Amino acid sequence: MQTYFADGILNIAITGPLVRIDYGTATPVTNAEGKQEVRLNPSRQVVMPMEGFVRAFEAQDPLISCPTIRKVWNRL
Image (cartoon, rainbow, N blue to C red; front, side):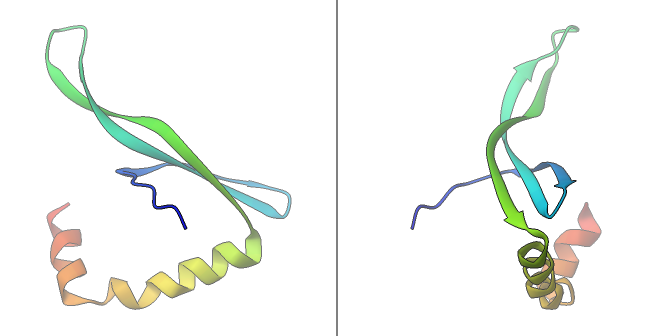
């Protein structure tokens, strides 16, 4: 199995019975004013059936109540 890293999710789209999740990797760039900022650039796309997406979402549910995750979530 290959492992891929992503800094965030750029988009989630539903097309018929499929869910497409676009992931992005953060890249530092200089904006028009010459300031450094970070942009998420598309890196991978995962396509799965709606049932798989719902199961994946349900699998993450217990993490939301984890104290460590809540501490990070509250800082965002």
